[in-house]
Length: 369
Image (cartoon, rainbow, N blue to C red; front, top):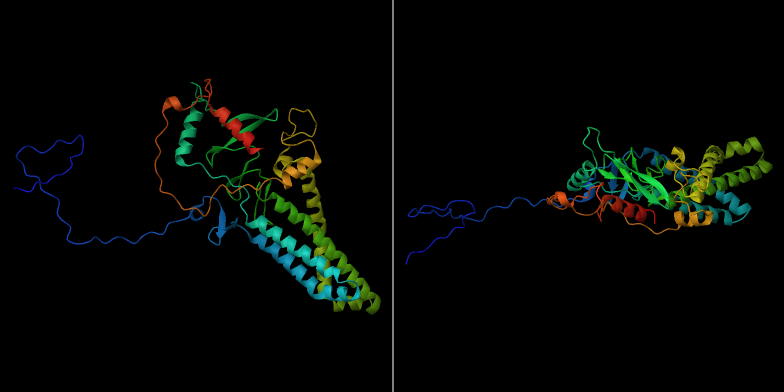
């Protein structure tokens, strides 16, 4: 009996004429050599923003972080000089509590600074190409027959106040309430406060409480060191004379100069952010004058709880939100998703149950909850 050979014919292709001989593909003579396996890449390696990542994506900073190094160096140098040259004299002549209090403040300041600098401030992931194309179709459906392009804004109601959502041309999405695009880091950040070069990062939803704790504790540490250095120089000058004291303690004089010129700006910054926390405002909103301070006004702050204590608890004691960018996750192969049928794209003019306005309204309320 003859051996029969079978081969699958793709649909739409005519089969061989009867009587023709179908040749089988040549058999492989040996195992094919597989190419070198590519190492799976993580998302932080192809992150589109202007950030630097360390420790396998666990830590992140802005690309220009030289001022952050200056901040850390000033704190370490001033505190190191204080512990080396002032604390021994004050501990022996006054009390041992001085170096203990200074050490507690110092470690708290450094901890809050590192938490502010290396933490994700609340970056929103950019839209994928399929999501951006779908959103473009939805926006185009808003247009009219004229040549005027549709508006790239959307209005939602939050606590009976109308809030306008703006479209981000870089991230290809409508920004949630209180979100702004940082021009330095090139990212959309939730509850964007400002970009602080002194901490080398944006200040937003996920690290604002650490930033506020940092500047508040730094103001206490600076004032404490300043007062202790003045006390040290005063006690020494009573024994050795003022000029002799200045010559024998140049490190204390340097600490005095650094603390004197920095304590005023740090105290002012702490007071300003205390006002923002009590009002549930951000620096970005305060500078732009987004909301009015008058109650009942059309442009009153819709995020304020009308209570200083409640605002402080909402800003500083709220839940810890997870990071949305998943910077240590592996890059998945880009699988094309089928485009939505035209009938499934909600129109803004039509009365549909699941329109884009309702979706954005629910999303805006969930962001401010």
